[in-house]
Amino acid sequence: MGCDYYIHKYLLIKFQYMDSTTIDLEYESCYYHFSLDEDDPDYDEKYEEYVEKTLTPSMKPITIYEHNEFKSKKLEDKYKSLIEEELESYNKYREIKKEWKDIREIVKKESRYERD
Image 1 (tube, rainbow, N blue to C red):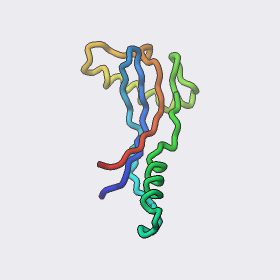
Image 2: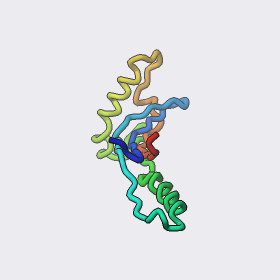
Image 3: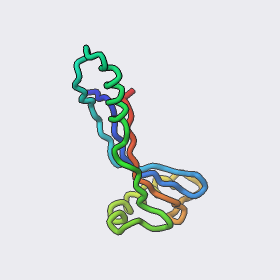
Image 4: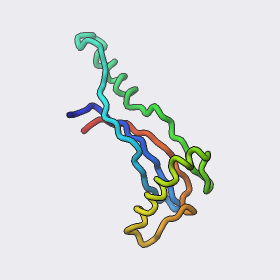
């Protein structure tokens, strides 16, 4: 079954020297719920405004790790093992291995985009 747009929440791990990777946290398939009669003279304009507002992420980026430490114990408990698994996976086929000390910043982000 189709959908109108997706909400994608993920962790962006930024390493030293401009390298990065992501960890997917959540994908949600969503539908537009726009209820204005198509015969309304402002329909197209209001629909475009609705879509633009709907596709604007509701969550501001949250820095959860910076300067070699998590921002809180709660965030560390929640994400540390997940990040360690990603580091292990990231290093599996790479010649130059990444470690915790190589992480510059980890940011939790949300993106929204229409289905193709």
